[in-house]
Image 1 (cartoon, helix red, strand yellow):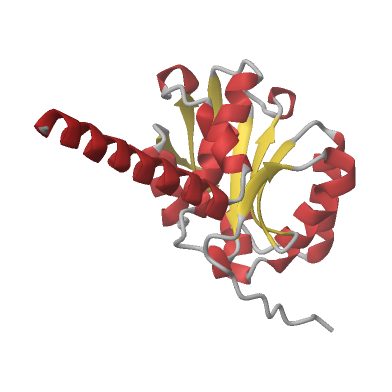
Image 2: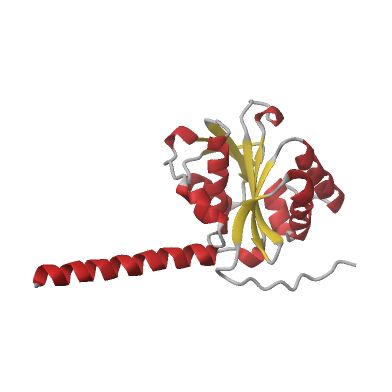
Length: 207
């Protein structure tokens, strides 16, 4: 009997990090198994049974796939997968995304996209392949936002992202690795300090 997921997200308390392959990839499996039928269809371009998901996660643990996860309460609620070029017919590393419905519309997809692009750049990749279901409008819009040129083929939208055209933002990895709430507090503190310094400097000039 399937257990009902009663998770309630706490905005600002999630964080993004890269999973270790063998110890933590079961977290990817559990995340993919929690996807609702529509989300599972969008992710894999079809309604697939649990045994396929389990085999898929096990393969990711063995083939060098990098998994960047959005986590809350120790559970993966969103994932970006960076598959090595050896797994692709055209020799391009491929990226794939999945976000559970309970944490959608909170910028999780953008965070995962930004971080997986950083991971790919650090591995020396110059281009990425992105493939998504033709009905996954949110994923298509996100891919377009990050420079993907998508074309419809065989029931899927597929295209490439040129990493040489992506802005360099090495600080983004540090911020995303920290809890989102802590990062937000850090920026708010810096902004408050800057306003204080500006006001003091302005007072001295007025005197």
